[in-house]
Image (cartoon, rainbow, N blue to C red; front, side, top):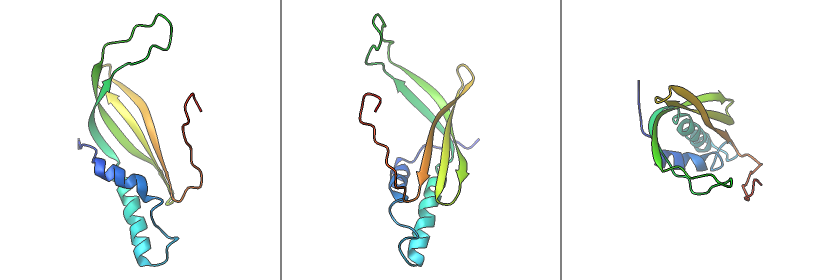
Length: 125
């Protein structure tokens, strides 16, 4: 089993790449940059040993007592679910050894030059 740590710099770079450049800019350099960006996103797939720090800060129901902070160790598996060239979907799965369970954690959907922006404004909006 190949275990890695998530390269934060690579992730931060990949966040900006799909809108940074690509086929809309003429020339071989743009095409090469587009492929470099795609490869950076695809390279995030793999297995990572991770630790979560859980710390409840707000009781959302009357009478609820906050739990003490704790850590959970897990193996995060990042799989390429789809790759259509202009859209890449990565699914994050957690394998939690304690309790022997798999949790569908979160998904990254990368769209090249996407025209739609979802912005969280608060209060479930």
